[in-house]
Length: 358
Length: 263
Image 1 (cartoon, rainbow over the protein chains, first blue to last red):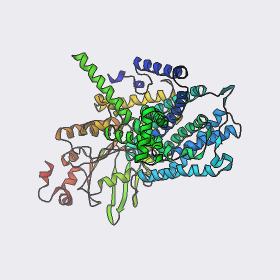
Image 2: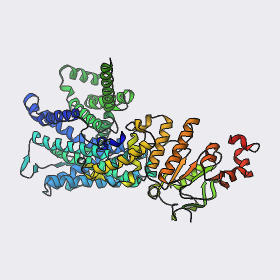
Image 3: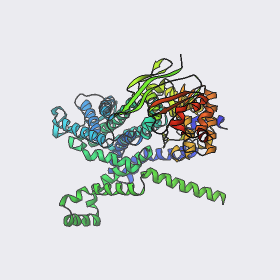
Image 4: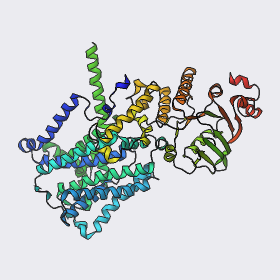
């Protein structure tokens, strides 16, 4: 019976009609989103969607490194910054076309990732986090000293022009960013289903066994860093055009931690989890910044923070919420959103099986 | 010349000799066992052979090629596979994916061909199918079909041991190191495992290098036996010769009545 098995099923993108159905629903939802947002919601949500697309790319990249290969990085804001500045400088200062500039910038990030991966060969756990943390902080310090990149004042990104198209509005950018995010998901998914991705996971689960199976730890660990940094650089390059203006302080430690929080909340090692985590935390981040404008809750929070915290306490409300979410996830669902999804699916499966039998 | 030869191998941990002048030969297609009390240096010997440890002196030759000083992945490429005493499976991967790691060295799909895999006709797609078929044959040989798509971390212990054997076999090794493949098993599972090791040896023609504590098994299936104690080789020969060796009885089998242990 096993002889007739179609082994491609294991790696195929669509394994059932239901999968195709949901994919079409999702794709048309994404395509129609700008119309829905501009007609029925605020156009602000298109901007939110762009931020989400950027963070999805970065989270997927970080997930390849942390979730799949089992290496930690607290310096992904550094790669993100490198990609953002390189793209903005190449297009704005040197007049390079957007897509090649983005690709070069992401490759530069990948090179930095490769270099950071070298010490990672000898470091593990807390030591690696400190090394990557140092890298992330150093990059922004260096950028802040370079006059050509605007130093502390920051750098303006030019108009986003691809060939004859000038993508001025958020809605136009949305299609580019969503397509990029989709491509990133697909690439990461394929990668994890094939040889290189398997080697990554093998290193995470047992590096000794992986090496005795012929996996060159040096190559694959540095490769994981490089690929992950490429994704971060790509995301950074897009982010420069979401904001239109970047400065070193944007890419601070909190950003690295946010990326990490996204994949932890989503579920380490799962691509759909990374996407879900990025969507949820980006939305929360942008929404909670405006929480003081919410009629009753805003006033209550203001009075609460003035009486119990410092005045600035409430401006950090999103971090308080993130922290709580992280703690709750760790306590109740260590597999994150992906784990919740798995359990829901299992529940419905068991239910429908029971229904069929009974 | 012997197919696999170890010469004067020594390895130190601090002042302690884990291996002290160990030497032996393994013939093509034979089963070679090493026995000895805990701490005799058996697993250290394995770790030296597949490059996890770097021995202090001596040499390990596979088909005349020196293995000492090489990295584990390079040694794997030369045709040495192993299982571990404490199972070292990729616990979150499925059984099939675990075996596919064994095919790692036979595959060529890299970052780009993998990431841009486009349908079953693409290079990566064809390669995946080809090697999954090979792994599928092994799954049948080891009768693991029902666990094919399950994450191995949740499988029963005996099954995990079998998966680890399968993963090593997927590498199509010339020499396969089995570190206590029957540890923690009951009599029936042990018989089953031994039968599988024999089948597999016949099917693949690989030499088997075995660490095992169960004397009945060792004496039953081995062509040659090496006895170690405190890192030193005590005796070597066919099972019969080794059992008759007086020092072996003293070091390992107990001085009084060796037959009792062998029963």
